[in-house]
Amino acid sequence: MHWLDWVSARALARTPPHKRVFRRGWGDPDALAAYLEESASATPIPEVPIEEGPEGAFDSLAARDLSFESPGRFLPEASRVARARLVRGSGDPDRLVVLMASWNDHGYQGRLRLARALAAHGVASVMLEQPFYGDRRPVPGEEQPITTVADFMWMGRSAVLEGRVLADHFRRRGYRVGVAGYSMGGNMAGFLAASMPFPVAPALLAAPFSPGPPFLHGILQATVDWEALGGDNPDTREHLSEILHSASILRFPAPGHTRAAVLVAATRDGYVPTAAAQAVHRHWPGSVMHWVNAGHGTLLWFNRERLVDAVVRSFERLDGAK
Image 1 (cartoon, one colour):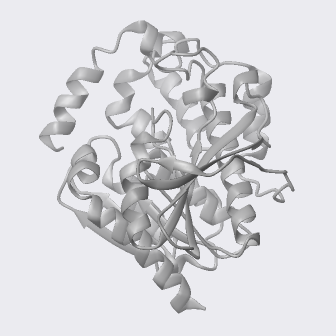
Image 2 (cartoon, rainbow, N blue to C red; image 1 turned 180 degrees about the vertical axis):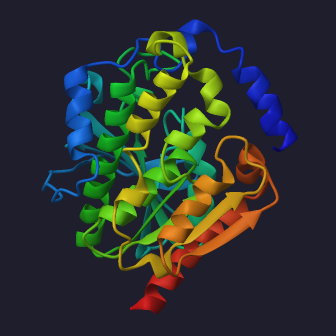
């Protein structure tokens, strides 16, 4: 484990009770049952009208806010309208990547540097704000809005469904479409790539095949309110593992365009075990896997050019596969 990830682990171990994940337990049993029933299904993409706001400036980029009714279920009122921001540089790019949010990435600032660097390569970005996050938080200002396991699973499921709507919308407008994200966002980008009815350019960055490994074996297990789930014991962990691993890229057949996929992972990642990142590469024939001598945080902070290159190369590989 990289020393900065180790420091992060020590800090997260002191997470106060009101900021812990799943602090209200398992959540609505009907919501959990419904999630488990449809977790491995790739339903048709609904035709959802997308409202586009006026174009303005967002940190030197041209930006436009988008909103539409979320196709996700079991969402709180504040999360039922999906929100996204389209950013691009000058000119008229023909490539666009759907950038999914990482864990605790409220708003768009966390992805802005990546979007700005991609704009310099002629790639537009559309950044989805996750359900429960940012302006979609049920309780404004609440630092950790994921209070139950059911909420977490439907947050992820709904974000993927919303990402599919965005990818389909921009493909219809003539863009070549890619999907990308870091950590949890990379995992969701993997779900997008596996469930789209048309080829996309996937770039998965520090992405596990499932949220299970980070919360059961990585640093994030220290943020779980185990007592609210019944105590940190083998039975609780097994039950949580069954639910979290139901959200697995490995449950979907490898899409036909996996040769376009570029995966980047860190060799000393304390959040995402290396085996969890390697599993996607093994499941997707022809995908490229790049390992960087870094931790989870330093991969993002000091190796951003590697991540930008992965997105750009995924488009090139998609074009070459045609």
